[in-house]
Image 1 (cartoon, rainbow, N blue to C red):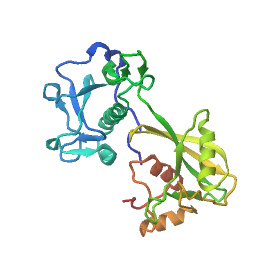
Image 2 (image 1 turned 45 degrees about the vertical axis):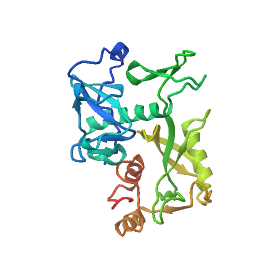
Image 3 (image 1 turned 180 degrees about the horizontal axis):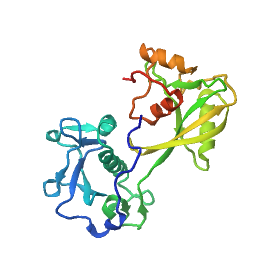
Image 4 (image 1 turned 135 degrees about the horizontal axis):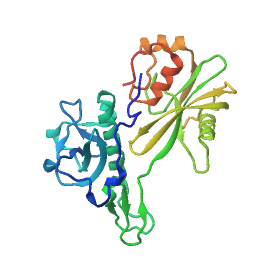
Length: 286
């Protein structure tokens, strides 16, 4: 199985961003409202000609097969465009459209929360086709923010996997452990620290597995496999309410009976689990 947004499919064509040289009459436009995108019957993305686009601030997305693509940011996608959350429909749209949509939503989410200069507080202006904000008062350039987060599947010497349940999740819903990288920290050390903080397990070897942009609002999920040095679980009761070791056989049986609910296919978490499990995992969480 694949996970959503895992491979870039378009050329971001940064050389076309300055001075609106990207803007031509044949540009296809995606209307963006937060994380919501327009659809065709709730499925594929709805693209419109540039001359039909509503008023808003622009993001040039790039080029795919000699076709130029852009997004226009609005407060709310019109109901006539059948809006849906990209988080929900990500797995159902074609990889090339998902690549463009995750680019657009990621930058749109940043613009929503970074309209003022972090240095002097003045209102900043959009520049370079949506990829920079410039403060007219002090001249500071601000670039889209991405917060790195590690997400990891930890196994022990019996090849069991440890999964955790957050306090806000219902009984039976479990996932891999995850957390944000702190300043001055390597990714490997972030994996070890987060696992120790959340479930009290010491981790030794850490191996990179893959990454997933997650613009809800601004994360980059960095997937890892790790080997546990200790196996006693001590949950922090803050981020993790419950954690336990699972065998492959338990995952197969418990997901089939819906006793165990795992992340949906949109997530790299599910992909990590599938890589370890190697067989059929039933269902997904609600």
